[in-house]
Each structure stands twice: as structure tokens, then as C-alpha cells.
Length: 559
Image (cartoon, rainbow, N blue to C red; front, side, top):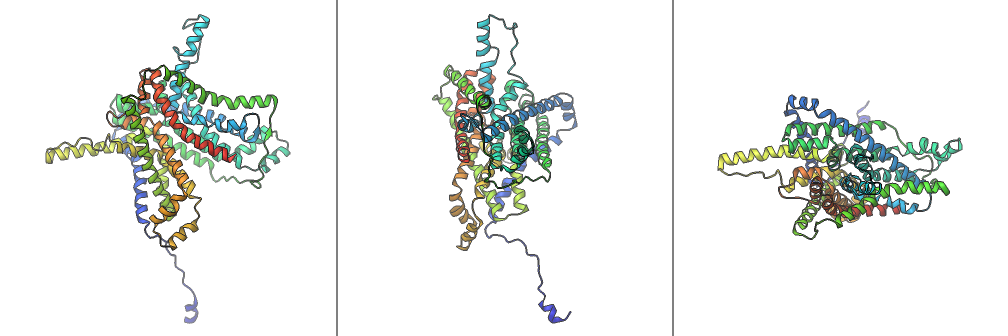
């Protein structure tokens, strides 16, 4: 080849991906958040390994098999229950028409307002041996305590029922959205080939909705293994109750860390197994999305059956506990306007609002960093930050308490040796460490809401803002945040309510003499003062109705 021809051949070089000027600060903040979310899991693993083989051997010979067996049974029962109710209700209100279907579209979401442990208090008041139902039964029949059999509410089955009633809306909402997006082509083709409606649903519609349904069931499983209030009150021994017992009752920090590591491994194993089960399967709409399946009109016995099936979860998941708690609260001696309850409410609102604001700011930093620098690095930071939702609150609490307690003790010893001063516990037992635990736990919810809104901001807006000389911070403040105000408010509200209802991390990490409404309800219920526990429980439920109303409005718009 001549020199002339060589000169005409362009030399192509691989250019590094373009970096947006001013994105460095978002990168630093994003990775600080990601590392903060990773810290509890790493600390739990290290603390568990330093506990020694004797501790885990003793746990394996005594309580570990029972904790594992009970947790697995609980997960199986809740998964089956939430799947059956959530998918069944979603199919009925989406694909059929019967009297009251518009009401049930919204009403089926209402049980989300209740934490499971609040339902446990209400149903114990009704169904326990000294409760209203059994007392009335004995008065009417004249039976003695041993003359009849009645299901025991304080049992594994009772705990499973409480969790199913408050968690099935996760599956319902995601399954309903999936059914609404399906076209009619595949379903009608199955019917034309001789399948009945039920068989076509089972072989066509349900497999197409599988990713959404699996995500909903996985959410319920994560909430189930993270639950402490319900299982502790019903005396069901799971990993969550074992962690709390080891930490407080037995003062066995190593045992608590090793139990927390077992629970962390179980949660991550479930998440990975669900992801792997999808494999490379992809689900596409067979036909235009506009060609939605026309709903079938039900009448007579079928309509009555549909009404009953949709009404049962609403009645037992919302109306019955609401009436029960209201009657209990009216007969209690608790005064919401007393100085003590004002302190509970103030503490709860302070924690919830601070944690919601911090979590939202962290989620915005992560999401905007992904927007500025899309790629493996930013995606890794976001994925690490999402891990906290798969980690129970008790595990996060142990993972934060162990390293910061060691730091406080080392600092106190150094200050006393060199300056004769005692610093005490500066970080451990502080509100800010508890806020960090909330941020780790609920980052996935805030980040998901923010990213959902961010997807509506066209990339041309970013290019236009940069061409006008805007820095990344200016672009975020002047372009993104005004457009994303609804998504930001949704994320803020979701985290706020989740913090109001959160119990295990608050019990372990709260500052001394700093109780919240959830802690007060748990304490009164543990002392068998159910009527008193109803008052803070009703306040928590009332606050929980805020995001439920928001979700109901979105359900109404979609339909």
C-alpha cells in the first residue's frame, strides 16, 4: 500500500464515554449512599464470622432449625394466600363486569393502610379466648371453656392470615396492571382452539402476567420475613423474633449477628432465585395493545360469587379491624391529647419526616447520577442501594449497631486515656443512625418512584439545558424537579408512611426514652392491654391511608 493510500485510510480509535462536567459531586454522593446501604450487610457478615464456631453450632443444635422451619412455613402460607387473593381479585375486576366492580377496584387496596401487627391486635380482641366472639358464644350456649373447639388466633396460621390480609394488595395491584396491558389476541386464540375461559386464563393470561405477579409475591415474601410485630405478639418463633431475643433478652450480640446473617442469606437467596427462574424468558404482547379483551358480563350466581370473593378480603382486611380497633379505642383510657401521647406523635412525625426527606434526597442523587452517567458504574451503585428492601429491619439494625458501637467504645476509651473525658455513645442510639437505617430499608421504594417519573423527562430537555449553559445541578433544579414534583411527593409519602409503621429497627435502635406510636402500640399489646394499643394503632392506620388514597386514585385513572 502506498503512502498516499495510507494517508487516506481513517484511523478509528475507541473514545471513552463522554463525561458531563459537574457530575462528579453526584457520583460522590451516589456512592456514599450505596456504601451506606452496603455497610449493614457487610457488618453483619463480619460480626457473624467473629462470633466463633461454638455460637453457630449451639444455635444449630437448639433454635436454628425451629426458626428456619417456622419461617419457611410462614413464607409458603403467605405466598399462597397473597397469590390466590391478589391474582383472583385482579382478574375479576379487570376481566369481568358485575354489580359493584368499580367500588371493588379501589376498595381492594384499602388493607394496605394497616400494618400486620395492628390487625393482630384487632383480631385478638375479637377471637381470643377472652375476646368478644368466644365470650358471646359461651354466654349463648352455656358452654364451658373446654366444651368446644375454636381456632387459635395466636398461632402460625393466625400470623399467616394477618400477613395475607395486609399484603395481598401488592400482588393485586401488579397483577391488575399486567392484565390491563394484555391484548386480546392470545386469549381469544386459546378460546378459538377450544379452551374454556378458566383454561385460557391459566395457560395464556397468567403466564403473560408472570413477571408482575412474581414481583408482587416477592414483595410479600420480603415483608413476611421482615415482620416482627405480628409474629412476636402471636408467639411464633421466626428469625426476626430470634434476632430480637438474642440481642435484648440474652445479650448475645454474636448470636444475633449470626441469626441476622442467616436471615439475610435467606432473603437474598429468594430474590436471586426469582430472578434466575425467569431466565431469558421474554413476554411480548401478541397484537396491538389497544385491542383489549372485552370484559365478560356476569349475572346471577356468577355475579353473586364474584361479589362475595371480592368483598371477603375487604371486609376482613379493612372493615373488621377498623371497627374492632375503634370499639377498643373508645373503651380505653388512652388520651391522644395528653403530654405523653403528644410526645409519641411528635417523635413519630419527626422520625418519619426526617427519614423521608433524607431518603428522597439520596434517591434523587442516585437517580440523577444514572441519568448523567448511564453505564455499569452508576447501575451498580443503584442496584446496591436497592438491596436494603430485601433486608429485614432487624438485620439492618444489627448491622449498623455493631460497627458504630465499636467506634463509640473505641473513641470513648481514647478520649478517656488522653484527655480524661468520657464521650459515651455519640452515634449509637442517636436519631441519625436510626434515620440511616430507615434510608437503607426504604431506598428502593423512593428510588423506584423517582425513576418512574424521571423516565417521562425526554433526553432532549437535558441537551437543551446544557446548551443554555446549565450545570447538572442547575438542570436538576430548574428542569427535572419541577416536572417530577408528583413523583417526588409520591416517594416522600411512601417512605413517610413506611417509617411510621416500621417496628423492629425502631425497637432495637431508638434512643433512650424516645418512643414512637408503633413502639407504644407494641408495648401495650405485649402487656395484654389491647384496648390501649388500639389508640396508637388507629393513628398509624389513619396516616397509612394517605398513600392508599394516592394509589386508589391511580387505580381509578388506569381503569
